[in-house]
Amino acid sequence: MATSKNLLTFEPQKLNHADAWKTLRISFANSLICIPNTIQHKILNKMEKVLIRLRMSSHDAHYGGNLVDGAKMLQLFGDVATELLIRNDGDEGLFKAYDMVEFMAPVYAGDFIEATGEITNIGNSSRKMTFEARKVIVPRPDISDSAADYLAEPIVVCRASGTCVVPVNSQRIKKG
Image (cartoon, rainbow, N blue to C red; front, top):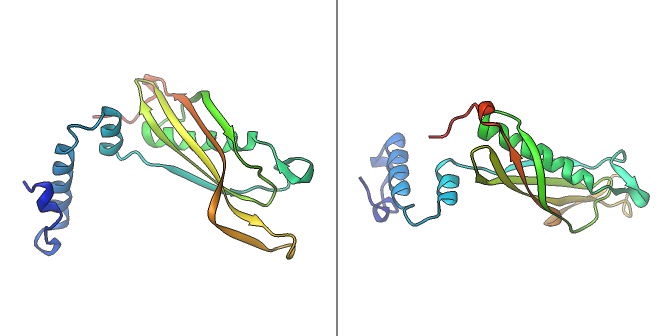
């Protein structure tokens, strides 16, 4: 078995794809001894972020000046949580509670919002998650009705964390 040192210098043409991944997985798993269990689980089970992007429409505007209700961000987080649970457990589960919600910038009709989330801790049936919504495109009605700018630095508009539950008898994807 190759050591971590050798993994950095191995020559791909001398090692087939399957063997390379097997060697990387074995060496990587062996190097996780000092990493906390929650991080080990995240790395070994390839926990991933889920991302959805959508444009806020005039139907989403709830207040004067085309301001979108903050609850719309929570709706997006609920959709992200549902996908995370389906990927992790094979079941939609239920959103139990938000631990924290922080609205950081206004959202308007015409803004493109990117909502991301990830599972940060897995219990028997509970799944702790964190979420972030960023504004990535803004309309520019001062230039023309169809002008918009892509933001090189997205604006964080909302952050949240919460807990979802998937009853054990509903978990279709069993963990090793």
